[in-house]
Length: 570
Image (tube, rainbow, N blue to C red; front, side, top):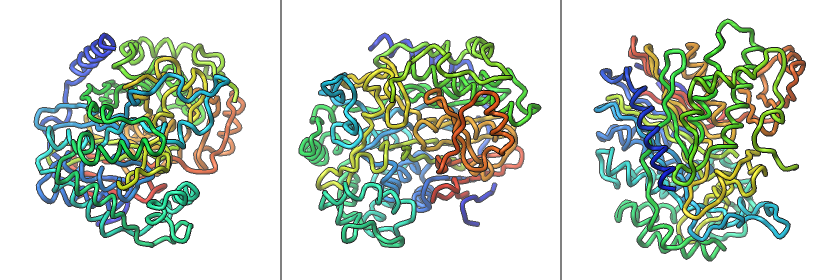
């Protein structure tokens, strides 16, 4: 079978957060619902069929889910460079079946050591438009290559060169240009035209190539071959590192050899929660998604959503997300730098207090919630989900931030620079590129990881498992929340990824919805409750889902029809 859906079977802060997360994870680990089961089938859902196929190739060679994660990561850097790349970063949520261990590999980018709190502010004290997004100053020190190194060394079975081989082949031999990627090339056409190396690969006579044009990336192929031969540390301390530092500084950035040599991934305990008998395992700071997701579900746990009308259900989902996003803006940041009240934020008692402020007959204006006051006034990440036949799993969200990151390529490498420094709060209360506001907890500091909305997640119930995640910037956690509710309501993988979506992120105080998500009667009723509604002109996200039904053994993989991806079961 083939297609989108196939079915078959500071130190104090750091220590405080780690201790809390360990206790929570230990308390909620039992029962480990799938510890004594193995699915017997493997499944991969990613944002491109060739990346899914790369993961399958590695599984077929005896690799496990973690080896496949390396292959899919590298392949996506080739065929979906708008969303991720070796010069980006992200979060790898893993489950190892042999000892039922859940862990998050934090490969988030870090601010260069020369970064300063006000580096993106002009003489008037306000952010300079585009400075954090469109220049080399916006590039954080990359973590994706270190994540690959860590996966191979600590969790995989196969040599690095084997797992990188599919990506090297794709970069060298090329792949046909698809419509979604062509549209994103068009977005960056003027930036690409100013860079001869980039224009040779991504433009034809100054224009975006026609769909179907074979895209070959010889410089990227050479970079990947160098790393396959010398190891991923070459990215941080070898020939590749020297090219990166020289290239970034030539482009006006502030990377140094010290920055690269000092970078390491961090293993962190995931955020673990419970919702109506389901065990929720998700990302922990500096990814905000797990806290926001569990907090929102804790609020919703006080209502019987299944027996409420559609408008009231939508109202409660939005009110829960609004409050959770408010806490994100006020409290969350890099756990190595700030102390966060994580235990309180994900405690059911705190949710009960939030629930007490919700009225069924009216919407709460965001301005009435204490928190960040906004100043007046992309979502191009990627995700993949993997389950192998032994029950190992990976939910991986990786990113460059916006389309092709900054659009600037490091000469001689084929690698685009991320613009993740925009995810810091350049100034308290001023929205970033995704209209997310922040506070001092997410202020720029040398060596600090910027806050992320990434929400790679495992949902496990007595009847089965879902592995899920999506790109979408500030929309991410809301999409995973909706997917979680759909899974718990019994929807299958294909239905979950295709369902129309709603969104609210505290600020701006607007209820957004995709075409078809709400009826005319719904919008009228929600407006009467006091919501400001806006129908989106586009659909958002690119959800990748794998599910496993324990009783039947049925495994499903589905890729969001909004994208070009593919889910496969093997």
